[in-house]
Image 1 (cartoon, rainbow, N blue to C red):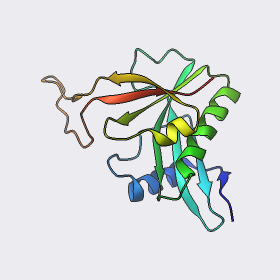
Image 2 (image 1 turned 90 degrees about the vertical axis):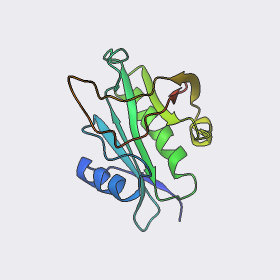
Image 3 (image 1 turned 135 degrees about the vertical axis):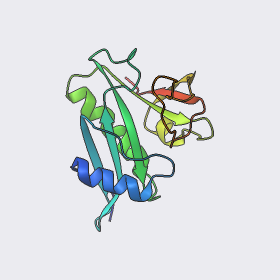
Image 4 (image 1 turned 120 degrees about the horizontal axis):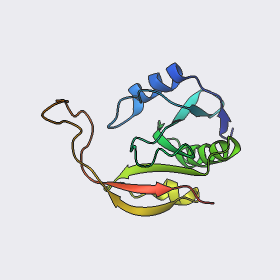
Length: 147
């Protein structure tokens, strides 16, 4: 049986991410999410929220904050395509996401996304507000959904 998109709740998406994501915990919140099912059960989820960077949070831009699969072929590409179609249908003009520099971006390219280059990196911790970094802090590749 082929893959099919399905609705997913925030708690369900978070549970899947906790179980399967290689380097991130579930996001703090979201605007919406989508799951992909192989006919037996959920094999991947995507979460979409406001951009983490306040400079990109213009009210017309959303960010894919997590895409997580169990390794099922084509599930990630399907999720990236679905998030852009859903964001457009809701009136958003731009959808972005980030990948680690060591990640190839094949699934994003397959879904029509384009790279905008290397961005930021570093820790969110500061002397006035100490934080423990539990995620990769290196520079990231910024991607934007195709038109």
